[in-house]
Length: 405
Image (cartoon, rainbow, N blue to C red; front, side, top):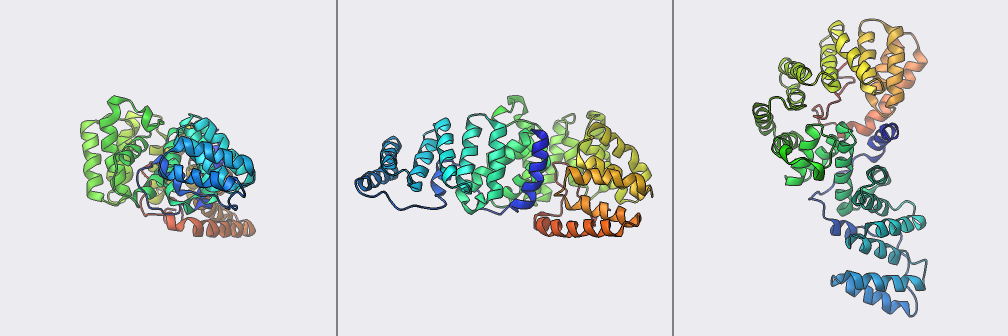
């Protein structure tokens, strides 16, 4: 799962564009009713016309079981009626009959393979059935297919994608998605909870949160939401309160360190080092230390943190990137290039990896390779530039590239 997800997340970042949307707390019924078939076929002919009309009246009146039966009867008279097939699936979803709804949305997709709304709702059915890996796969693919064109369902799909990414330990991408939701919506208890779980890097869903964690998750969530909304004073207050009340909570010092990077890097380094005292195997804290020291032109001091991070997480692109940058800045070009090539292989959709690799190739005199990587950096950077918000993600992977080399 995790290997596939690592590849999928970068494809999703680049391809989806994280389109903006009007966001409220997800409501299942609205999601199903707002989306419509990609191609609406003509209404049933002959005797089924009356059935379709009666089904629509029952649906509008809230008599969902009756509407479902009538749509099924009308669909039986005309198997190619896409709109009827859609209403059968969406009514099953609204009736909480998720296994049946999943199969019905699969039937919609057989006829309309690019129907992002149907795939998104199929993923939500898988979520309700606790098939979380399949749910996340469907939801990510729905995002790539353009589910943002259906605002009601887009909200629900993106929220559930974010909380599932958090559950699977993809904290950085989940944080970015939550931040985009926060930029478009007022504060809600559900968003605060989702942010809090993410900021504290807890691989659980909101419904799985232990009762004794709710207070600290609430504080972390207030901080995460405030950062996303650029309410810096509120974020600072919440982070300070979190650490004052829960000084030994894992990831709290790390979260404050990321916040402080933009205003006091020395204090940020103190928090990262304190995090390592509390969480000795904390890879993101080591990466933040390494990248900050590289930024300061102190690669020799960054070496230990970078190499320790790579030992702890050898398959993570950022650890290979950190080691590669350290070696490049220490003029160990031949040793830097394999590390940076591995970083690109692990995260081909990351502009930063291509930028640093181009720099290494140029130093090695590999002009053609350097130009290829610069071109790829430019292409990817144009795709994701609008997503950059000027702050490091509280999730943890530092921003590297032209501004942090």
